[in-house]
Length: 560
Image 1 (cartoon, rainbow, N blue to C red):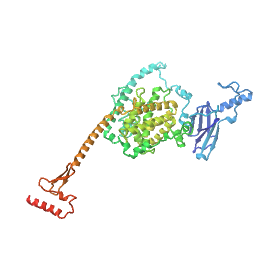
Image 2 (cartoon, rainbow, N blue to C red; image 1 turned 30 degrees about the vertical axis):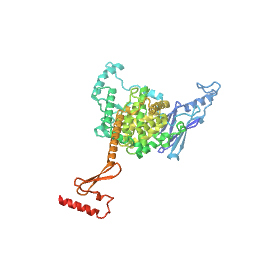
Image 3 (cartoon, one colour; image 1 turned 180 degrees about the vertical axis):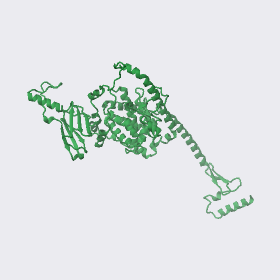
Image 4 (tube, one colour; image 1 turned 90 degrees about the vertical axis):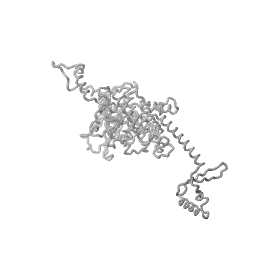
């Protein structure tokens, strides 16, 4: 999409369509709905953020001009302003360029009011239906109505009472577990679990089966699953592995050093790029247009539902930022597993419930998993990743979308984790385009306050003591044992400097050598009265020394 203050140009690539006036149909409805139809398969429907001039407006203007009336004045305009008469030049136009991308159709629309429209690069936002269309869909009557024996329509309360027992029986047979963004999916992993493939896709065992006895509420079932997740994490935590990476910053680990020194793409974005319309690359814009249109978002989301989705976004971004840094921005075949295993949302289908679950809780759980599962289990690296998540959110929706688009590519290439695109990644890409910029910034600002409190050691909500892994106690015992080991080693070195034992000849005798206060060396013979000093370096080379020793050895052997 390209815009000027007066016109909007929409470039559509249709390389496999035979273009003619009879095969291309362009309609603009209500000044905001653009429908481009190319039979038999192509249909483009866009909802513009403001009004353009359509055929009806031009016809009305020409009719008024023909009979000598001026067009009806729009509300909000000054009385001394004269509205410009519309002509055929203002009608929507189509231009076809067969050489560009093997066939490109350009739709030219004139704006009703001059100006620059925001967020035209968020193509998913333009593909959402208008409120009028949503209301029309919601107001459709049922094709089948329930009636009683007399032919009268049953009331809603009567229908609910009649179906209540049936619903109770169905729920008692099988309790449905919902997950995904806004809990839109269920029974996705059931067949994979039967085939034994679910364990390769996520960590949660039997994600479509209830952990309790099946009679608990959804909230209680989610609590059971969370407790099982934390128990599993505690069992898999390796204190020795954590201590190995405790001082990794001073050990010269190449992967760690590269991850810390890396400058990721969200740190390279300038303010002018964030405010401009050319933020996304052509490949990113193409992927945004190709993603399935998410039209089934719940209407009138509550504040808790929005906050829950943003919390899911936080732990997914933490997992992505960890993999991005440790792979130097070049994903590997293990990247999909890394993102899955670090994110509680992806690995356990975690659902957050604000205000009980907070941003501090989500970041702590992500840091906790980064010290249990991946290759680098460094608390220092985890803090850097938390700062990355803060920076991504503070830079707004477009930076978040770019990270999610890269994550979409990672999951799409995986044979085990591609379903997470449908469950979480793609819906998040569609939903985040509908959010206000301020909502994303507020989460980043709150996370920044938590990180600042951590840096100043005041009310540290992200400290090691909140990870429930006893890290401080593990480190304290490690350093205490290290000090004791160092003390014992020092005592051994002091004693070895005053007393040495030299191995004697084949008879196995020893000679003890000590040093007196004046620094004179004293040699003591072994129990058999034989001296081995003749084999010392100071005596080697003296005439007859070796013969003398051999003779003594021979005499001693004969005596024995």
